[in-house]
Image (cartoon, rainbow, N blue to C red):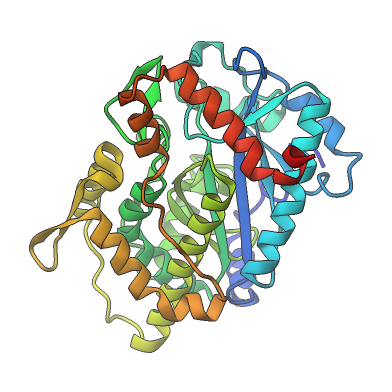
Length: 395
């Protein structure tokens, strides 16, 4: 299926009565995983403009054909688990698709990398995928589309009920900073240590329109009113132009969380996805228990403060507890998330272990020990192959 005939293609997902019906008919707590990879020359580690070739080859593979998607630039490829009735099912489907993708890439003389950014690729060399959909985005976004060479992890969780999906989306806003901190894996850009833990977030979340942390919607009616007006004025022509870091997904009837950097280690990607899924499910369970109108969301300025702390310091920093009027180490915030999500993790059958150090911390420690940025990236590419497709590496 070429990108322009995807369910999320132009014109799809903006019939808001139909979208509402999709959420009313959705099944609670189904899971979908989406992982993005850079396409590389295995020797030079330079980005390779070969998504169209890889996509076409994937169409003859029954495992990959429904799973492979493009994401704006032709040096990137995404694989999706599709709908899993359980988290375990989604993980097993994704394992199979990872193996198939890495095998295909190897057969084409390509390597795959999973970090939030490429440490030295020049965005001026980027090419946009040549379809009507992506040409429209390039026209609409200009420099913003050209600048976006970044890779991430997205998690979908089915949420039944349109108003309930909006309530869950609103609740997740304040969890975006600690989840980003846990995932931070993009400290390098332009062959330099940026001083940030997630420069990817600065590239994507700070530049794209209708991105980052939206204001609370409150209910479906207010959400639909905004999206309807954006549609009427031609501001958006497809639902995927709503790039918020957590959003109701119009085609799938899910809440999608999309703040996190791609993870270099395959099992860490699953661990992080498990925590994200548990947060979404716990928000739904909490909403069901407390009823309507009993949660007061944080304001955008408050969340943005903690988002900056996550971008700058990752797991090494602290966050502000605005309700308790105190500063809390980010590690303690994440431990609090584990405690809060215990009922959801039991419901999902998910065990989550936070890493002692995330990707940014490990990369910066290697830099401090004398490794060059190129050596660190080469090791990361090898680690991606070893941990995302371990059966292939062991053969």
